[in-house]
Amino acid sequence: MSYSRMRNSLGATTPGKSIEVDGINITYNDEGEGLTIICLHALGHGAADFQKLETNLVHNYRVITIDFPS
Image (cartoon, rainbow, N blue to C red; front, side, top):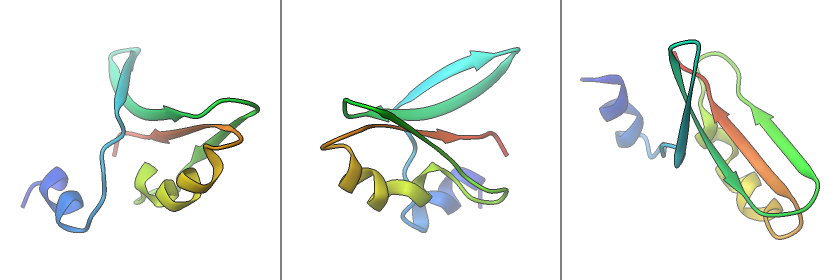
């Protein structure tokens, strides 16, 4: 099973935007307005770890969740 298929089967979502830095594609989600909160996940995890937190914070803050390449 591919990595992306496994993440999808576990309910993980892929962030909505991407940027290429030094030839590496980094995906991220950028939602809300106000003071910026940047969420960085641990190894073996992803931006989806912050989904519930992001949902609660976007009403008052700009929340950026980064999905580092594995």
